Image (cartoon, rainbow over all chains, first blue to last red; front, side, top):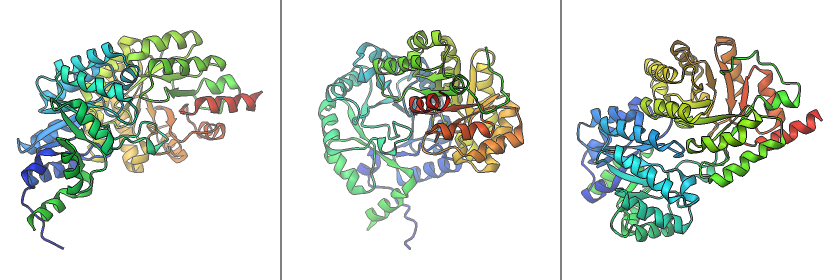
Length: 237
Length: 234
């Protein structure tokens, strides 16, 4: 058993980690622990559900940025509802938002409706860093490519590859994941003008490095695995 | 307009059975065309109670379902629950504005699991105030992630807040247990309309839930179950 490592992560690593807990059973104590870890290890951003934003902001007191998903996990809310969730989250101190679009509109290539929705949310977000959540497993290549352009044009700073939640209630296998090919394509389509966030399956520093090499600028890391402590410990050796 | 908690008995005809079944569009990524073809399928059966659709689709879905007497539902904070109360209230208001007749909303699971039932009550009361008299609201406590004590304390908070309907589970990831319905009925009598979601795959499953006092059932394989019911009552 090694001593609890209290040194921060190496800066390039800490900068890209979105330290995340979106489980339905997340407790207030889990939020406290997540924020404490983020502060100790120098993580740049934590991601919690919108109901817990103000709690995380209070706890962090500026030590890290707080993000929350909007219309998590399915994006089936009307645009005005997403805008309200965004507005309240930002007023509560959220600096970033993970916006889930109406996937049905994207799949059907209803670009006017998709653009109107993103514009409505962006207007309500008051300058917060916006990430557009895509689903590379269910959206066709031309849709993903156009969605990247739409994200850029409506003021989003990132696109991500999946919401990370099962899309069909009875099929656990419908949780999106990250593949080299899918991330590579998002990076290409984002074209350097907006960033790419990887969601799904990050378990090691090597995973983070792999995604950074692939061109990703953010990586979701689950707060459930105690990874930061082991990473900080590894970095100290 | 608003349904009352019924004395839940086992339905004895196909029509009575169908009128206590509900479902949702099969995928959150369905296009409007795919959703429309799904909705048109209900014409081949006696009317079900309600179908849940994406909020942007309420108007077109109503055109298809209202003539059949099928109610339109939307969801919010579903199935994860931990959206801000303001977002839930906004979803309720938008559901009303678009003409949905029911909204099913996740409770603050985070507050429940933290033992902060005062927060559960505040969240529920805000939703009740937004919905009252304008849209029928079912609140989801998500029984499958709760201990019996957490479930009872959550339902006490709901009752204090004026919640009149609960849907036991979101159906994502866990099956609702018969024991939960029995426990709820034993402790709360007819305080709540009690709907079940999750794990109802067959007619036999459904009848089992009705037998223990369930008011309505949300099932994703709805057409398979209705076909089975047609055969059973033919």
